[in-house]
Amino acid sequence: MIHQTALVHSGAILGRNVSIGPYAIVENNVVLGDDTEVGPHSVIKSGTEIGSGNRIYQFASIGEAPQYAGYRNENTRLSIGDRNVIREYATLNRGSPAGTGVTQVGNDNFLMAYVHIAHDSVLGNSTIFANGASLAGHVSVGDFAILGGFTLVHQFCRIGEHSITGIGAVCLKDVPPYIVATGNAAEPYGINTKGLRRRGFPESSISVLKKAYRSLYRSSHDLQTALEELRSLASDQPEIEKLISFVESSQRGIIR
Image 1 (tube, rainbow, N blue to C red):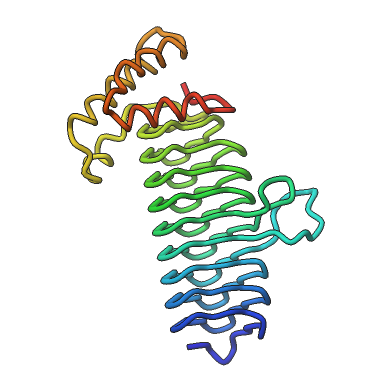
Image 2 (cartoon, helix red, strand yellow; image 1 turned 30 degrees about the horizontal axis):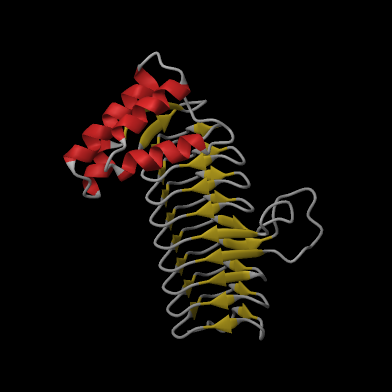
């Protein structure tokens, strides 16, 4: 399953049924889980751990040093879970000594061509990054979030679960869960109704989220007053509780 032209270091750890294509490079201290496929000309750098069932397409750069000016060859890591798809020319960097030292990618994510995941970023599960979407360092992305093509996310921002950004969105502040965001700079454009319905959210939950959105964005309330209204909606509504928690814990502020 390893092409004769591939360069695989003897210190790499390969699971069962791993496939490595022509001219791919797998360095020392790399772990590849069972049933993972590495495409031609891909490079997987030392300090990278990849779970099972992943598909890495040709010319991807996985686990390169962080693009951080203060980096001095410290031992940092990239951790990738299971069943992720990483398409052509995607670049995923290791963590930096200025952060946690680890860049983390969960399970079942779909990263399209030319996607960039910078140092110390954290991806949840089942996210989709369309072509050219890019994260700066220290960004977190929640489960089931979708980033439209060429979306750019500023360092230390958070993208909430089940949110979606439009093509070319520039996120300079946190994007709350369940929100549609687009523009430069990104602004809110309602609840991600179609996405929530596809994922089986009941209409009652979507209706409450729409009320919460009106409190946050359509009323004349300041943020604290809007949060008080959200708390009145939160009874037995875990989505509203998550929304409140996200807003209250924001360091950069949310898009408004």
